[in-house]
Length: 286
Image 1 (cartoon, helix red, strand yellow):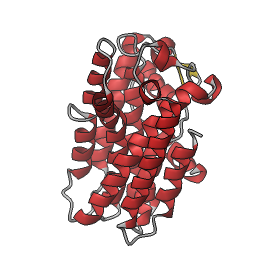
Image 2: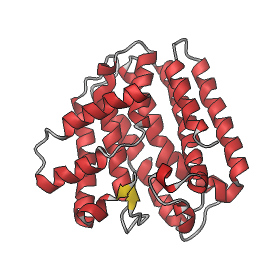
Image 3: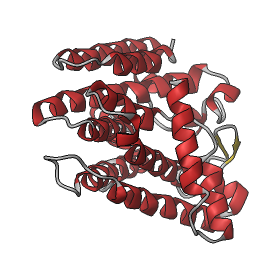
Image 4: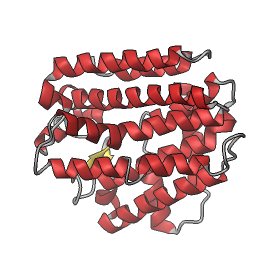
């Protein structure tokens, strides 16, 4: 993962610092997108492509497009009108560093650029040339990430029950992780049956990832999180830990981890990379 993160970071640096965005806009885009992070989404895309025998270069552009899309969601998530968080990845959030208007515009620019990069990437046959754009638009739009965010905001007024919380996390978090695995699989030339198995792996891992984040919000340090400990609780958000307790959340995450690995059992491929990433995701919460 360290080696793959270096590949992703270098590609992001090269693409973002050579675009023609004007002064403060490019600065704000780079400030957020190059601030570090685990790079789980692009690494998953690269690992899925690798499991099918493809090289990193095949999936790299769509992989980094997923990362800047994710960055856009973080910028907007931190805004005063959303979660009103002042800290992201251990430093001031974009709206604190550049002002609210510039933060919104930087997020908008990264969203648009992610679709441009997806459109630039060559999709292998037999998938249509628009497949990467379609995957990201579906995962990130009104039936995916944005649907989850709207439900999350509504839950601040009317705390959700277990099914509604599951909806929020499957859409706000798991949808883009599932998309990342699908994009990498498509880049590697997966067929329909293989793509279904990759999709299930991504869905289960994505939900496990969010549950582990909920656990860490209660148990990790501010330095490790890059944001204040217990920020979700302080904002009155319902999480898996607040609804079910830490022990039950950990048990559910383990179950999801098992389901994700079981999905890979249906692939006659070298899935060691994807299995290792799944284990990394789960072990963060213990």
